[in-house]
Image (cartoon, rainbow, N blue to C red; front, side, top):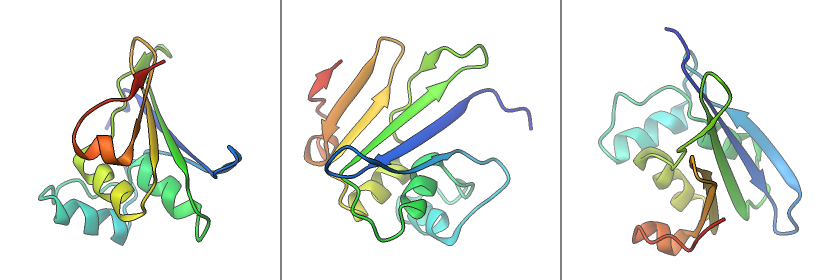
Length: 123
């Protein structure tokens, strides 16, 4: 499979210190990825998404913010809003702040507003 874009996720603690980072993987899966995929009815989404990989790499550290970036083949920023599988994982790990890239900039929202699909601000 030819990779067309890269998705990167960074997890930060409450002080803004980077605690983990990961990219999407088209070859590797994980039982946690499968679990959340099945919970939301997307059984086919078994390959490790950047968000879940970054959460796993944070181990037992409390994540306060997760930032997701998607880059096209020529390096331009693209929409990286978390999919339903990753939103379910973000909810389960109670990550209060989520930020993702768009072509126009970055969007930041709280976990509560993500649940209701309202965006807090466009940076």
